[in-house]
Image: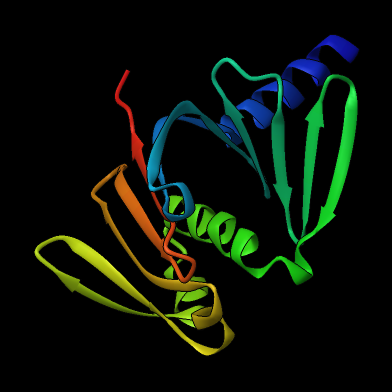
Length: 159
């Protein structure tokens, strides 16, 4: 009986999960240089797990908390005061799950030629200049332009 229950739980957990392989380009204005990374985003229920290739660091986002796990140490960050980081995870989750009502709380959405443009509202303008993304069935890319001059582009990789 326990084995059947375990199998049912595993099936439910894994059926709710999805994994996206991505590549990230981050332009950092202060050093006038771009960094390139590859990794995975794993969506499990209300959590996002981010792991970069060739790194032991794992980031887990849930609600207003970011857990950073590395070398058996866990750091917990409250994102209530880290608006920019929270917005990036909220955007990735909302776009992935097609919950555009959540995005509309913080951004004005416009669309032209299959590209979505997000203009920040309220205090988000203190952190983010603009966002654009293209998504059909899967996310093609998202570009986030920050007020400090940094630009991050994430592209889903097809394996």
